[in-house]
Image 1 (cartoon, rainbow, N blue to C red):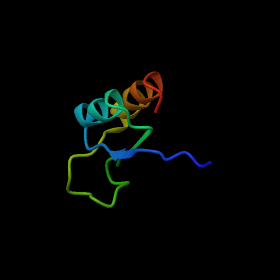
Image 2: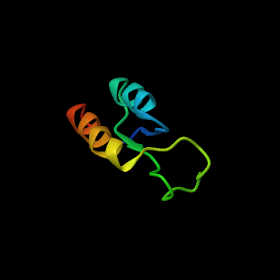
Image 3: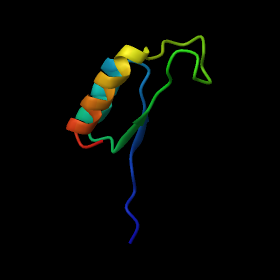
Image 4: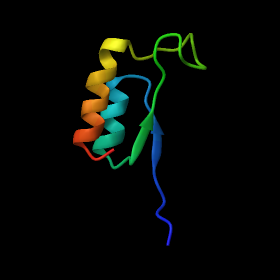
Length: 60
């Protein structure tokens, strides 16, 4: 049987935390200019490691 995954967008660290603290299996995000939403708030390269650590520590 296939498992359904909950995948959530994260535009900043707070939304990433909200997603993984509330059961998201995975999150997706944009970084600086590497994003389809270039004018939106995006993660910086410095925030990326923290975002990955938070996600992994919470099972995402």
